[in-house]
Length: 197
Image 1 (cartoon, rainbow, N blue to C red):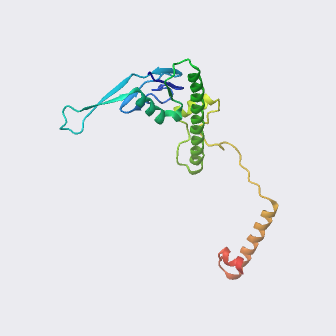
Image 2: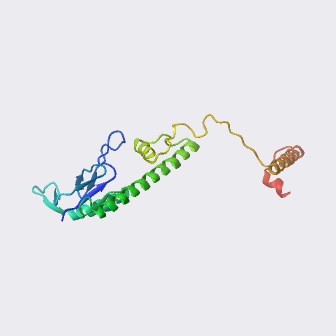
Image 3: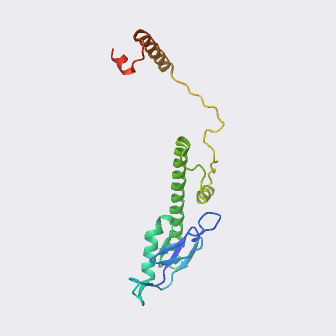
């Protein structure tokens, strides 16, 4: 029986999305997939391996299409890569295509969320990257979201801090107590000791 593989994105990707060298690789084999297209797997795959540098003839491993399909599903299923024995165009394939797109969009949302969290931490600490990668830019475009600029989120904006009046009054009293205690003793005491007394 023939096995078919479907992917909502091309493997390898294009240079524009930063995925030029990303292939589907399982069991020592590379599979090239076109975007939104069912690709038929070969019936069997062979791979020659050598146990050591003394092994001149090597051993030939044989993998059937079913094994390759299962390995692809396990490794790349979260990205929306689907495998089936059904013929392209069938109802099963149409359902798998819809599921594939859903999984891929879920992954892209997670990628954007992770980038935005890392970007926030980079803004706060000064360590990390503020600009998205080409693949993250593609995710923003695919989901129809605005691509963030390289600067800080609060760049060129006035920042105002307002405190509740009760807190302002409490800080004022505490400051007066501290200044009065330091004048009496001649040196500043830790706040902890003043609060206890």
